[in-house]
Image (cartoon, helix red, strand yellow):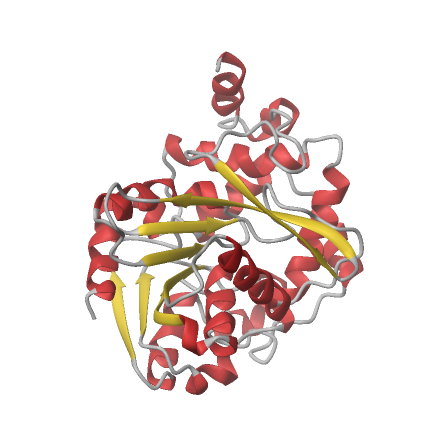
Length: 331
């Protein structure tokens, strides 16, 4: 605990942050999750893979099963407060780490796609004994995945909730230049605790910062600091390529599931807009801006605006987020 506390304190110093980041392992082997981790083992693209997931149940028969899908800079652990609140409300909650992320496998040469991740998630739910209809909640990149899952498996999703999702607009079409994989690898080579914190403070939290956020910065940076850090960087580069090339903006009209968009309004995230020419950078819509248009494209969708909250409302204000989620669940 002393070592972890020291590392978190040093995150406040951008120069010292990466050098002092604890080595949590490329698969977060030494980072504790708030609930026991379970495993789904299978084969994908000719290689053995395994997915970590949390499966937390209430004491009584659950009202429903809610599946929580994390974003690119998040893990199943980041849903800890949400899981606690939902279980207290009588729901069973399943929260997986996707392939390429966190505690799950990061296979060499893996061709990441939201179709592949959605298929693996469906198989994981089969093993976990959740083959029926689920409530699907996706945050950030997990929102793209949740939308893809609902398109591929409409009969398995009773409600779709998207929390500050990416993919509601095609940022390449809006002027963000395509970055080849080698360029993404070069960017990942520069990633450390200081750069993670700077990015999140600017884009996720509207320039604000709380000490509690350092825990999540350490979680991510602790993977990069591991002996297999290059494996993490390669996976993250490939995942960024997936995100930039596979938005769901053009397919929202095909989503048959009742959908709620929960959007923190101070979110400045516009995926890779910083690489666009400065003259057109303002044309790249942020997540809240894209949501205003996207909600009209879904056949049955409602937009819930959370003023004063940013990209991660479930982290910034878990109780207020749970109230918004309650409203989505009661639709």
